[in-house]
Amino acid sequence: MIAGMSTPPIRALIFDVFGTLVDWHGSIAREVGALLGNRVPDPAPFAVDWRAQYQPAMEAVRSGVLPFCKLDLLHRHNLDRVLADRGLHDVDEATRVQLNLAWHRLDAWPDVPPGLMRLRERFRIAPCSNGNISLMVDLARRNGLCWDAILGAELARDYKPQPVVYRSSCAAFDCDPAEVLMVAAHSSDLAAAAACGLRTAHIARPDEHGTGIGERAADVPVDWQARDLLDLAQQLGC
Amino acid sequence: MIAGMSTPPIRALIFDVFGTLVDWHGSIAREVGALLGNRVPDPAPFAVDWRAQYQPAMEAVRSGVLPFCKLDLLHRHNLDRVLADRGLHDVDEATRVQLNLAWHRLDAWPDVPPGLMRLRERFRIAPCSNGNISLMVDLARRNGLCWDAILGAELARDYKPQPVVYRSSCAAFDCDPAEVLMVAAHSSDLAAAAACGLRTAHIARPDEHGTGIGERAADVPVDWQARDLLDLAQQLGC
Image (cartoon, rainbow over all chains, first blue to last red; front, side, top):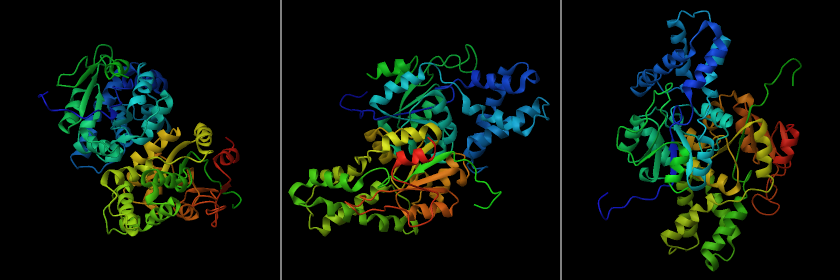
């Protein structure tokens, strides 16, 4: 930092959710196993394949090919494709609906409930996720999280990393971007937030995509690098 | 109800806030007294006059004359007008900023924190207010309320009683309007919600605009009439 310049104090923290706060890989594999049983003998690759459709589906919205729709709808479209790719054409509608709601039943990493509770004492906190509001509500209830508000894609009506998603989250909290800390386990998310003027914290989630497959540290410049949310809370003096 | 017809179970409750959950009249009078002192010897009429500008200001947005802006901005415009009407032209900018934030420091009616806690056990709950997200966040923190999400005007980018505000709140919770109960102390708000297909509960707030000046009961058909939120919780079996 250049001598004489100062940054404003942080007033709010906004969080990526899938991978950063919740273990989508383990949770989706569990749900696929429970709902499809021996029709999908190895549910972990199914989870990875389903998640792999995530960015291309959102890109259709970001590029303007599709109007904005909730992530639940994109997840469903992607599910139908992954089932078809495996020849599982006869999975019935009720099962597909239940499977799609698996994204509402993801488990938080163990540090997340106590970490958010500590961070909430000092800062306004909200998810800034591509997940829709009802999905965030269900994850919060399942994992005992208490948000100040649900911000992110549905409020902005576009998907990260579009700048409007970060900017509208800051604006909803009446904050300048420099007063807001974006917390994520993904360097690309943090780079996009930093380009909008937000401050950034990377959380290591080395097992996000399965054991040993996840970002151990940011590969872009960040303001904080933390092992988990409890470590971040300590670094921020909470 | 016609025999054989059935209504779906209620899954979510959305709430009007100013007057229904918080005592704007008493709280604004207190803040005006504290910040303007003997320049406004009787702060209660000041509160009433400020609030009287509320509907006309929103009407400019609803009618399309003004683009959507946060209620904080309308409140500020209205404050400047009320100060000017009283010849208080020399109230400085810092005081005006503090005064405008009085709307973020309103006190809940005593039944509201325990009532919402009970209702939250059975239902998703959110404010559906014309107040902006940051205002709702500050009221929730001040009064110990735990919302599932902040819905209402800022999400819809229009003001009640425009149908989009009620409908977008239901949609955010993945609910049909008939699965959502709108809770308010104002018959006009409930009539607008009912016209969108929501179910309705009226809360008596006989002192909203000062002692004895408030709706004791709905003057339109409603599904529930309650003395307060604890009474509503009991009627709903919580």
